[in-house]
Length: 314
Image (tube, rainbow, N blue to C red; front, side, top):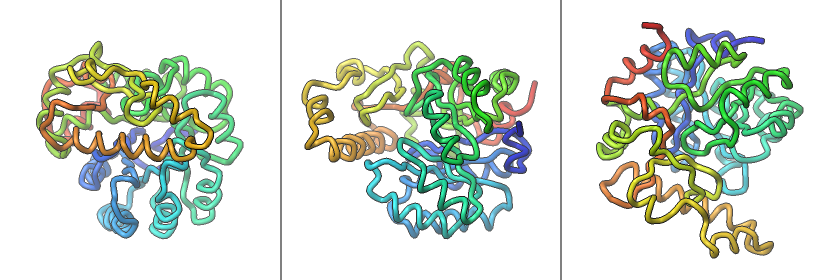
């Protein structure tokens, strides 16, 4: 089975992960220049014209492959327009998240775009494989942001043994030895996020960056308070006070048949606004998304230096 570097014709089998409000075209440009690839969430752009322009600008900067992350469930009311912009601008690949990628896969393949699908278990991996996905992003329990429930090595083992398309690990990779380890288990590559936030080029607040240094792996907790699905965040005093489980009202809204179709949009939109405030403003009311990779963050460095340390042995 091909590794990610062979699939995308890049030097190293690593994706700079599509982090909501965090991953920027500037960061992806640096990633491409350093021999890895990157993906940007479509939701980072307020207008579809801005999304399309960003793709076109990146293609002018480099002929190397990069991607866009697209939320395909009903919480994304911009899905149709974002899909249209992506199909017209033609990045090398799209990463689907949180919904049925059937339409995306069908339409993307018509114009030569590969589709990698986020999954958290074997059941969904087989579903997207049957739909024609080009690769699987195996989101494990060590991933930052929206995380899985199965540990890294176990999930890779299950998917490699039962799927016929490449498996890209997401979560639990922050060092070169981590990268080599998941590759030895049969992964085609790794999608990496948290360590890249601790870079000078990342535009999150200084408070957020200092939290990445201050806190460790034992300070990462799983919460459903952001978007209704499990998300890994730093256990700040605010998170401790608020708790990590949905309250009774949130559960009633989510489980009510009449309100359910609106709940995903409302909860996700509310969560995105919280993340935007936390990422870019100084406030104690913070949901700082991160993975246990913060254990290996000791200082803020240039993004190119962080990439080099990840992909090259000492």
